Length: 323
Image (cartoon, rainbow, N blue to C red; front, top):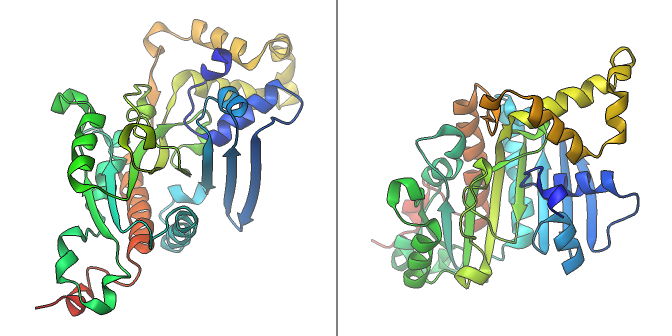
């Protein structure tokens, strides 16, 4: 399926959409259900067998996508709504009664804004593992012991992220790992407007096309939930988006007739060939990326806080501590 993989998307929903364009029948082993909540679209994609896994280029598991164009706007009410919806979806996967110790990993390079989603989210988490013995009996069973780490990237630490996390897991022995990372999308409309949850783990560096060793249950011995947001897109993909948009207008459609005989991958190969060499693997991100990373990392951290310890927060924690 290399033809399909050339599109470089980390989103299961996009993988399914692009595969559907190439085949006319349903994909066995790929189940998709969508629902809407006014201005928010929720899509659930289940990859259930090896054939579907191979076709999509995504591991077997559940992928939940929350899309809202309004995420990009500074609208507190909408951000609160998305936080609540994200928390609701996480609760379906995370059993707070079973996963008592949770390690949250903020992947990425905090010095590169589009790649700083993980570290920024970690800064907004309410960690509680160090409070375990201090919690009163009335609250102890309702609180997960949360710890967090932002391990940095190979170029700064000289260590693979997986190596660092494996060492932490061996010491902390968490019941569950939640990994947060920036992703790449194949559609410009999904940049910073989409949050994906997956119970299949994650590959650090996915968002910038530099996949490292995977963080998943197979490599870490613990279930891994991945939360990701596409923050970058390839220049060639933007060019393809532009061509596809122009094809929808009658006055321009005739200029693209010959392209209709080519597969999407063949079209993209042509686009890459005619783009200036300097644009080769250029990654593009919105100019307001600083604010977007602050807003989206807050949404993700707030949702995780709500799921792992809904009863306590930084404001009321003192009343539940033994002194």
